[in-house]
Each structure stands twice: as structure tokens, then as C-alpha cells.
Image (cartoon, rainbow, N blue to C red; front, side, top):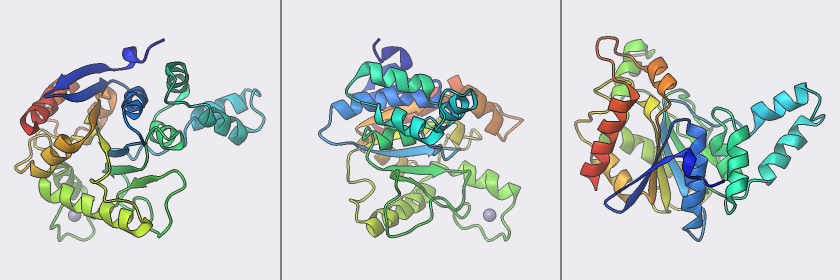
Length: 266
Ligand SMILES: [Zn+2]
């Protein structure tokens, strides 16, 4: 079975764009990109969620519960060890058993992706910063609030304003600086220096304002320099996370707006 059914592939100005409905299907696109490179590309992902569960945790738990995998963790690690980005069948099999939020771990633990940096809105602490690399090479970037917020404690209005800034230059610059600091601490190349895939989950956009940045300079640079772009439409999550009841955007409209940014950036 080929990997093509998992995504819609478009090419904009020579850049490969892969659109998936469920985020874990992006693993198929990442494997294809991996095959075109000598070493694993990094991932810079923009997503509401951190998406950093261990690969196959849900499936292993289910098999353990059903008595088919007495040692749940050994069973899970066995599945991870079987992921081979070179082989379509292996990737197809992995996607079948991956549940929500497990795809990045599956990708880093199989060397499909090198290091992953998650720009996200659900965990302000992110991955605790240390001088050792994370075992699974996934770094959720921490955040304070929108840039310049003076309110303590931060509140629901803060969250709206912060999510409105998700692809504004000043917000992305702050996030990328945090990623660069993590890279520096553990001795990795600069977050934007190594080849990277830019991955965007549409549920990171909570309002029309969020997808219409005043200053898209940094976002456009991330688009231009990415080896490829993956986009997850995640219609249910977009609906769940949307914050403006007066002005709904569905995934089709959001996707169009995002692809327009890609065209303008390139
Ligand atoms: Zn605040």
C-alpha cells in the first residue's frame, strides 16, 4: 500500500505541502521527506496541543487490557522499533495503531524526525529546560502570555490575546528564541539552521485575527526555509478550540487562509 492515501499533496513554488485530516497521518509525509534527505530533519510544529504522548501508548494499553500484551511497555517499544521510514508498509502499519498526540514521539524515536520543537498553547511550562537532551528529543516550548502582558495572574482574556498572536512576528520570535536557548544548552545547531519540516495544526488558530497577523515576517521566513510543510486540518479540534462565537471559521476557510500565506511567503 502506498502512502498517498494519507495526505493531499500540493506543490507551491516548488515547496511540497502535505495536508492531512488526522494529525498522526503526517507521519507518512515526514517519512517521504526523510527519504529525500541524508539525515533526519527537525520538526517545528505550531499546534494548540503539545502532541507529545509516547508512541502506541493507547494501543499498547488496549492490548494489555485485552490480555494480548502482558508486558505493556515491552510491547509498545517493540512496535516503535518496527517503524522503518524507508518502508511504506511499516509506516502504514504504524499510522494504523497510532492514537491522538503520539505521532511526534513515533517520528523522533524512529529517526524519521531529528529534534522536534513544539510551539503550543496548552502547556505554559513546556519541556523543563536542562542541559541534557530529552530522551525522545521533543521540546515543548514554554510561554508566559502574549508579548507585553502585565496582568497577574493571567486570565481568560489573556489567553484570547495570546492565541491571537500565535503567528505574529513578535510572538514567534520569542518562541524561537526559547527554542534556540534549548538548542544552545544541549549543543544542537540553531533551531532554524538544520533542515526542518514546518508542521501546522489548524487548531492552533482560535480566531480570524489569529490567522491574519499584522506582521507575518517571521512566519513567512519559517515557511520559506522549511524543506516541506505539513498541515493537519483536525476539524473537530478546530471547532473545540475556537474562541470567537460571533465569527466562526471552519477548517476549509482556515486552510485556504493558511495556503494563501504560504503562497505569499514563497
Ligand atoms: Zn496575561
